Image (cartoon, rainbow, N blue to C red):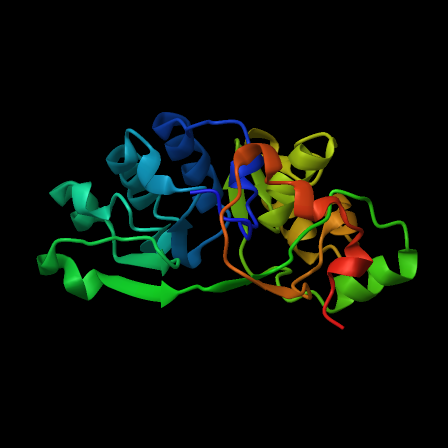
Length: 235
């Protein structure tokens, strides 16, 4: 799928799969410093991973989270193995208009479906140079410190900051910390830091205008995001 509202920018990202062995090592290191109620596997679309069971095994064995959740559009859910279902505590299906999905009924208790017919503008390809607006958005950000993330062997305090720099031409890891160099002190300092991230200059901070769900061809996917941040905000 190429949903225009994908705030992980999956349609604009290079195709890539996480290495399960590397993921296991990185999650184990994080687990020595932090513990979370729920560890979430998302994408893009995680069920596209050819070794998704091994990904879940790495997540489960790390001990980083009490529960393991997978977030998916559901298109491939019926093809998942018994091992997948045994490893997952919860499967959240984001249901988009016109997208069909199903799952084996014996796993009904593990599945929740969230209907999604609309999105909010989440980012601009144009840098926001209005310092007052950047500060205002940062202070009122509804997604700040809501979900920490691990992407390409780097820790991020905001998942949008893991992807936005790649799209706008910044150093991909400008807002991340390499897991292999991470210490508990550095981790806590990053989480508690009160300064906007580089990605914040391209982000609507959860205050974007609403628009109806649609899919766009890959070559046109970034076209709507050529407007400045100020034009993408709710009035």
